[in-house]
Image (cartoon, rainbow, N blue to C red; front, side, top):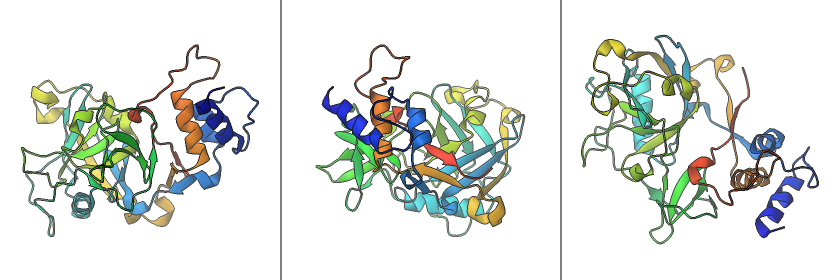
Length: 297
């Protein structure tokens, strides 16, 4: 048994319901068996609830990332409070790339920072990182910090969020524009990591991405809709903290420094459950989606 697999079984042995001698568990089984201490609750003020109209009438739940883009996230909270996203719509759906919504032409609410700093990366200082021990094409190193997938440059002392599937960023014009947050996009295709450190990432979709990913693709340039009537309307946007306590959705994300997460990563990299003939021996950063779970329904 190689060193990686010994690490897997050592991590699995501490999880209730999983014995080291049992057949190798799947990532889903590891997540299901993770103890309560392997999870942290997402604050209600970090949950952005987007209610869509049109045929779906679905809710999209976004976890915001103030630890990586504090000024942009503060802008988004002001826009939510001013109801600036409501009665806009999804303006762009580009196949294997992004969905974009919002309207930057509306008058900004009071206090909005029109030109935020380029929050494309942050300092490593004070940031606990769980490294992914595999090479990466877009960063000197990668891993997870504060429950997010990150690129890492230790020589420069910086870290940044990665453009994985479901990540949410701020639409902007040409540099030096950084976008106010009035227009947002979500990644719905192969991770466009070339955008890392070029656009402010402000969060990720943790529920309901299929309501966006399955929308008709736009026929105009870059996937924009040619007619306003094609857009899916946005009916309501709230922070979960604005709702009465009994109506607030409660979500948890797996802690990345736990044995459960270590076992999960190793299982993603080396599938040993019966379906697999040959383990891959490695895994891409964006192929390790952070496990989340809803605690009330």
